[in-house]
Length: 376
Image (cartoon, rainbow, N blue to C red; front, top):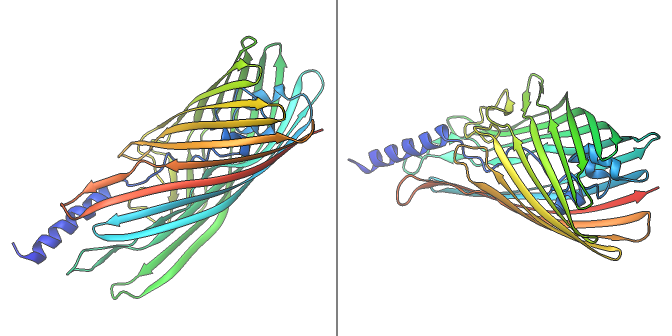
């Protein structure tokens, strides 16, 4: 067998691997860093209302807030991606600021209302170009960037009955999308093509919180699936069921836990003019998530930390792990400032084609968040 034949066979095997096996490094498109406090506590605190951003986890728990509360935050989120596709290596880094805002107002007769504006579905992914190894050097896959972001505007109502609170949420989803593709012809002449726009849809959620006793609080939330789009893109977002538990170890020490199931199998984001050949935006399995965190309060200072483990939704599977640290300081009974940071370690996607050639994708994520809460 000639060298050229060996290269051609190797390339075809590698190409088949790429096309037939999804190589995403995602737990889905869920964005769990909805606020500074939620990020520090791994969004495991749905049974304990630290501030108004409880609306992003379990809105029924807003009945724990005693006064009108406003929480605002901004998170700088960065993802670094390294590709090695049959010897073609490339690296990409994307960073975006992600703001969020929350408002909870207690009403008379145990009624509470809340309004949330935050992103819980987001992605900004750069896909490397792919060429067959020498001497063929044929371009098979053009470089592309996909960035679908869904922002939720969600009013909620909660009612407290003794130790039980029930919540209902209506969610308006505003989606902003971008597709950038380096379109190249057979002769290697390339031009950058961009498609961008926005669309919208609706969803909702039901939630409940139970103060079981003086040291244990439980909560649960079910978010409905949504399906919307336009001529350029289609969003098929999954339903998500989450359960929460908070244990008050002491008066100043709380332990938060959560388990979530996101039903990503067959769901995702589809661009009309992009085939997504390596299935970065489509789920092939559901994703289970477990997160645990703790908060310890020393006077006006609160120290926070947590870890979360998410199942990847691609056919390779694996687990994506995130570590978080944070702190909050109350300058008065009204004003609290929060700071948090997190590091993401995605499951590596690797397929050996030969001893020297492989398909390898590695993602790392980082973020820092600053928040403020004011109580009237």
